Length: 136
Image 1 (cartoon, rainbow, N blue to C red):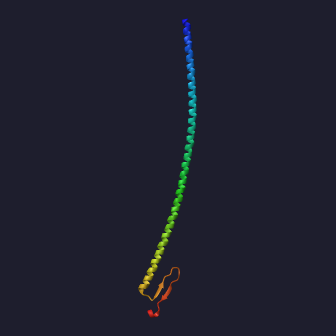
Image 2: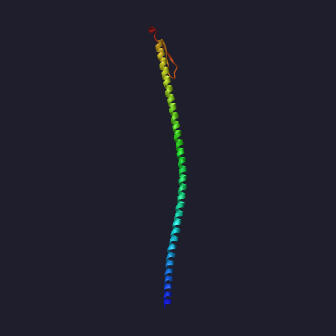
Image 3: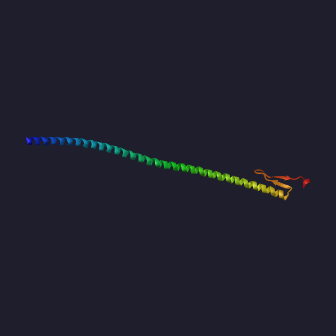
């Protein structure tokens, strides 16, 4: 009888162990499936990150090109403005020089007291103005 009880206890323990192994096998299988799913998701995220990194690099390169073109345009515009300002300043300086020269000639004529004065005229031939003979 003892042997039967011992045999029965051993069989019960064996069954419990088998049941426990089955439960642990299910848990391991679930964990493997979970790890496989997490691994796939990680791979997907890595691929997306690589695609985004490549797109970012492309956009940065494109942005650098756009900035370079914008700077070239702005530099060309600045150069045109500088040239226009230089031309304007030259025209103003020349006009001032002509005005000063004309005023100097008039002053020299008046100071000389000449009865025969020549008044300069821009773009026209000078005219002689003769004072009346009774004023001379």
